[in-house]
Amino acid sequence: MHNESNIESSIDPKIIEEVLKFSKNMMDAPKFVSAPDEISLEVTPHKVVQEIDKTRLLHYEPITEIKFKTPLLISYALINRFHILDIHPEKSWVKNLLLQGFDIYMLDWGTPTSMDKYLDFDDYVNGYLESSVEYIKNQSSTEQISLQGYCTGATIATAYTALHPESVKNYIATAPVIDGWKDTTVISNLAKHMDVDKMVDTIGNMPPEFMYYCFSVLKPFEQGIEKYVKFFKNIDDKKYVDNFLRVEKWLGDTPPIPGELFKQWIKDIYQENLLIQNKMYVGEELIDLKKIDMPMFTQVAVGDHLVSPECSMPLHYAVGSDDKTLKIYPTGHVGMIASSLSQKKVLPEMGTWLSERS
Image (tube, rainbow, N blue to C red; front, side, top):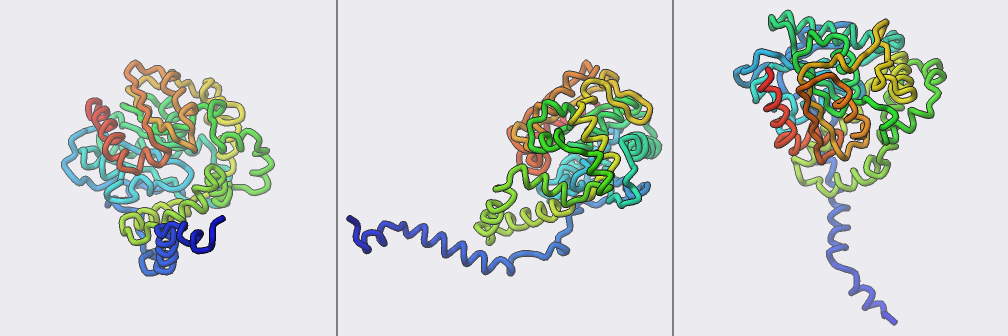
């Protein structure tokens, strides 16, 4: 039998110290934490060179001499905003590519309102993306650009590249949403059982709250309790706190998705899986992935819980390109684009590949 003094002495003093430190960090948090409006997520200087409806085309100011004639346009995802590609000077996808000597443009899809609920794939592919490509071609006096699509932005970029291969010199697909039936994520399972017609008819645009719910459902513990426990534990680490707050602000700023586009997305990609079967129409045109015949570079993350590797990789095998590369990285969806691995491995490999073809 243990007596009371034995029980007390069996409690590790380190645990008591840890609990006291954690409590102190929670009390001190307000002193160390910036208000959300004090945090700027647009790190790298740029100009807005074209605005159509809610969309903006950004052109980043060069940091070093531009070494490559072919400009690169990034088609960011429709969920959350492009800021994650430029979230912090030390983790900026954009800044890294500028330092490598590329001429960088970004398509910001903006914030759709109820007026935009009838916008569909055709508007995004043959409207906004097409207009951006044409603007860049005119500005840089070139017949072709390089195009990179990320996540759902890669689905739009893939459709565009298949329909307009003559305008794309090199295509980079980063965690693209392509094969809905092979996707093993929670989002895919939710999508397959969704009465999307009823949802869109009732709500109109897909609200940010619904999109955020989908994110939280993916990893409920990590998105809930665990991330705040980590935050308070690291409250006196300025770098950690700054990074945490930037990502939180980015996560909290999720624009709605136009109802018609969302409906087409769920049905054509996840429920009927038309894109990978070359059966998907954008406007009046059928998408044939074999028409993607330019050099292509596909980037996939093994631990991606938003777009599983099985959903992305089929694109590599479906296109008509002879010159194609598939790279698989030991990280997650966001880790592939905004981490030290991204800076040290993903971007240098992509930059080397692109520089040889630009």
